Image 1 (cartoon, one colour):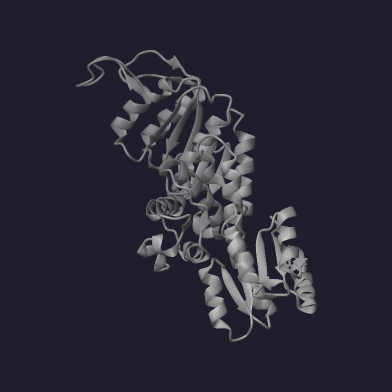
Image 2 (image 1 turned 30 degrees about the vertical axis):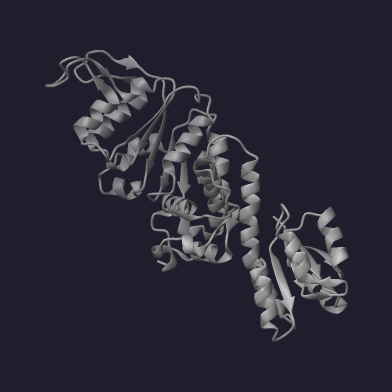
Length: 391
């Protein structure tokens, strides 16, 4: 999204040259040579970033900076000060300026500062957008402007209204179950049950019981009849997480259910018709598992009619500001906060972290920061030490 910059400086040559340069960089640039002209631009246009000279013909730039601190819309300000006037720069920062540059202004330095501030502006824009939306926070897990995530969002929209089986792949913490739940909510089965089960969390005999159910006295301790998840989810969606952990015998039974669309309870003699949409997920390489004989090829092809891959967060650093905005919005509602953004320093630290726990780890970090944040902006002091260490 293009950012609109207001360049306020009475030096015509500097203002004109820098404005042309920034327009070539993709920014929309408005110009003003006085405080009065700047106020007029602010009154008629949405400004994302202000570049403000310290001294202007009709007053000091600090006066406008002070006014902005009391307005509803507070675009970040880069103050321009005379060379060596460090006291002026410090005063500007204390009054709320995001950054400062000394004259003469170096083009590359200005570009670098603007790029950094633009990330904060993007985060705030995303927060404003999210505040206008109603409902829960499921969609926050598949935000992003990287090509991979645009493809994920498009695939989810395309496949959700169908009955196709979907295999969701990706490392732990990338949001596979959330994507499965979004697919269900966008499907024609959204008013029917969604039942998830983690195939890695249960021993084989318990997993079989959970999926297929049992008849009375089917085994020692089976006191009464119990429906399995295939029956409980009838008409809806069954999500098999970490499908790669399923043992070969269970894989064969699952394949039979998929092919016949019937299920037989443990200890039962009849096949019960079931109408379910099956979604599966794994953080393992199923192709390798097939080569090693640990996963059935015929089951793999049944499960992967449509395949959606979720990349880890370290491969999509450009999406971090959007994730942060989405999570901040959710925790604002949950914790009764009114956090409007994240400081550039904190955002830099978040982008430098390797995120071994992917999106789930980022969400936990933002929750912690939101809890400790007492103002309207998450600062670097609100982040845990492991993030500050750049690990």
